[in-house]
Length: 150
Image 1 (tube, one colour):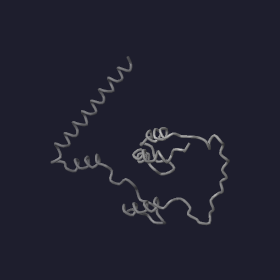
Image 2 (tube, rainbow, N blue to C red):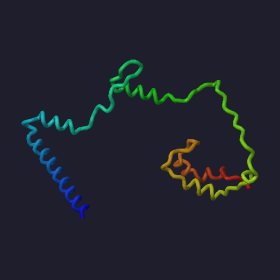
Image 3 (tube, rainbow, N blue to C red):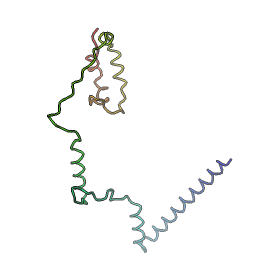
Image 4 (cartoon, rainbow, N blue to C red):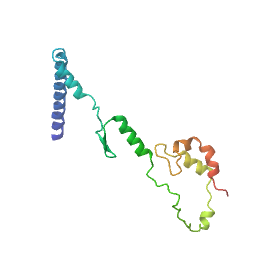
């Protein structure tokens, strides 16, 4: 019973707040000709915030201009965070020998086709970088080469 009482009073309060807001906005609109400063200050406060980001400290200087901020972010995020050095050698990964069961495993064309057709297109691409939506459209072409021979 307490929950029903709470929801009833809550709904009444919401209605009173909405009615009060509507009445004050109507009164403000009626006074707009006589008090334009009050109307425009209310309208500006209700509008979107134009300054979304403050100034940036970039290379010992403060960046205020929006285009400079955009260029700084573009430069920062377009340069990868990886290290491109030719003197770094790839590690030698010794793979363990495959068992006879794995070498003789057989995967049917129907199984490959079914698995590829059931890919979730809402997920991100895998390690190969190919999105599942693309794979689903070419499943008939791709399924054949992925099948292991008997």
